[in-house]
Image 1 (cartoon, rainbow, N blue to C red):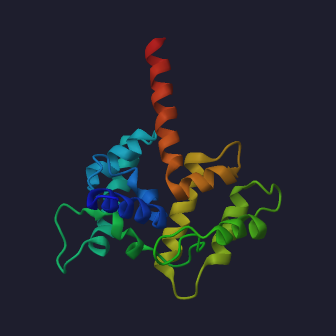
Image 2 (cartoon, rainbow, N blue to C red):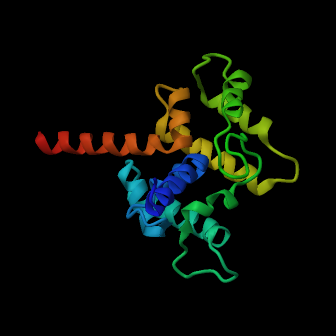
Length: 197
C-alpha cells in the first residue's frame, strides 16, 4: 500500500509530465524551489553560453513580463519571481499551439510545424521558413503575442541553428527543456577544453 508521501510524489511527477511548459522553463529554476528570480534567469542564460549583456537583458525582460501573470495575489513583487507551475497562465497568442492552455505538449501541433513549414528539409526549418511560420501563426489584433513569438523563435534560431537549419530534435528539446540542459553541458565541456589547453 502506497504511503501518502509516495502518493504526493506521484502527483507531483504526473503534474510535471502534464505541464511540459513548466519543464521548458524549469531549467532556469537554478535552485529547484519552484520559483525563478531574475538572477536565476541570468544564470541560466549564462550557463548556455549567452553573453553577460544578453543574459541580463533577457533575464530582466522575461521576469518583469511574466512575474505578475504567474504569481498568486493582486500585487506585484519587487523581486519579480516567476512561479514555475503557473507558467501556463503566461502563454501568449500567435504561437504554434504545441502547448495547450494547461501547458501540455500537443504532438499533432508539433508535427504540423514541419508538415506545413519545412519545405526544403522535412527535419528542420531554415530562417525563411521560421519567418513564414511566424507570419502564418500571427493572429489578427495580437501585436504583443506576435512580437513575443518573433523574439522567441529568432532567438532560438540564433542560439541553436545547425548550419542554417533549426533541426526537429532541437525544436523538440526547446519545448521539453532538454535543449537547455544539453547546451549547458556543451558549454561546460567547451570551457573545460579551454582550461586544459
